Length: 71
Image 1: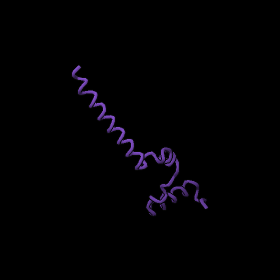
Image 2: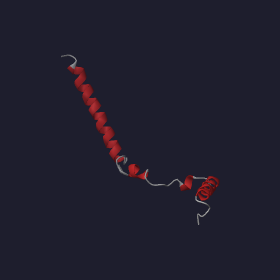
Image 3: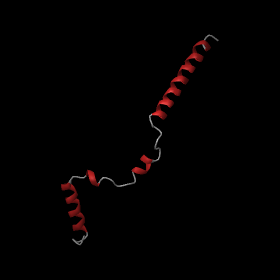
């Protein structure tokens, strides 16, 4: 029975911490866009990150595979 004097206040403190974290997350827009990152992986936006030299080499490889008739 004496353990209840420890567990009840401890559970209330943990509940208060959880509620504060939830309120903080909502106020700081942590739940703003839930589906965006999942769909973002489907789009190929790596073209801007490829250095020009590597892009030219990959284009040359692609054109040589297709018989040189890329354009």
